[in-house]
Image 1 (spheres, rainbow, N blue to C red):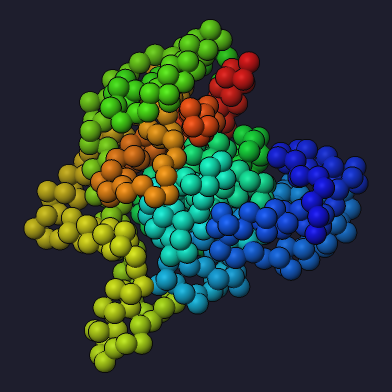
Image 2: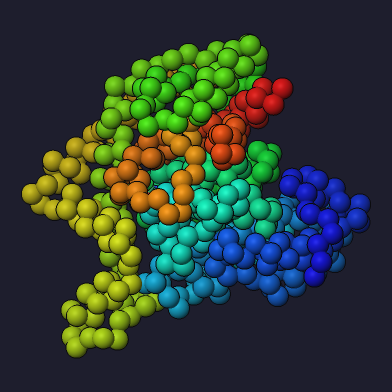
Length: 475
Ligand code: GLN
């Protein structure tokens, strides 16, 4: 297979070519397959659905223009935590070895109903726990900008798949930044909707009150379309809101942005990111938007609250992997109890075990009030603070991550890794929609993003504001 023309990076451009007959879905898939083959050493795909994607493309090519779905020509990869019926699913873990999804996630069903093509399953941190893809049972994915660097995580495979044009878009999951932070590290767009917007049916659970499916793509317009296709009530997820009207306000002129002073004064923030952030603030001001500082006295409690609560939820969610029902089972046993213990000892990696232990600890009788209940109260206070801000501001601007991608060989302690999530976990603690758009590159040429957060269920306004920020930055 030889690649002549690289697929366009926007759905509009691809659909234009498909509609005027200068491209077929089959040719499109062939080119992505050849890109995947060429970039194999980046370790992006856990599995490629080569034959199946080609067959689906051929079938779609037969459709008359009028019968084409909204996602006609959109080729997706799925993070290895999202169910696709009849396909293996392992959450980047040994413990799910041999497991095959019995049904498709609602989000996936909705993509397929609009003619999307799914080209494969991509690498991620084990059970989506991590910030650099290094906890995956399949080994780390490499960042395409610099192969010695991490791609971010946990949806690292999704971000590199889009970055290197191995597919047009990718579905990831975002519990504390897993869609936005790798998007920042890879120079692409990452969007996480409000909690309660997209069905979690078919998404492997990590922290159920935080998890949302999100989208990684090149263009905000594409990401919005995919979001529109996936969102909305689903009988399989009781936490979804029945359709909430979004405000009709088109927030692209005179936007009131706030930035959190403590976030910009954070000692861990890389100076080039800080400078670029203030540069963006100036440009937005010149374009007649407001960018005003707000103060946040709970900033130091954000990471502890997030890690106490998500570990607690994870310890409960992961209790189902016991060797009886799913995937891997240790053979090296002589009793039922030994079977549980050996299966979980051999099946889970170190980071997942750490979270299970931490979560079980904070939920234990003697410590529940001191840790879990306290963290829930902090979560509530953070939520109240954001709600107050959104009475005066349209969006919060904040860096997506404090640094650019670190080296694959760097030794980083778990606590250092957790602290690096400082800007991204806020949206999940409060249940807000958030998007990361590329802001610049550092002196090593490594990309970084800027993040916008809006009030809950204001996704369309948020994406419009992001479009405005992008155009101001480019002008
Ligand atoms: N890095 C964060 C964590 O490890 C976020 C992960 C995620 O969003 N899935 O919990």
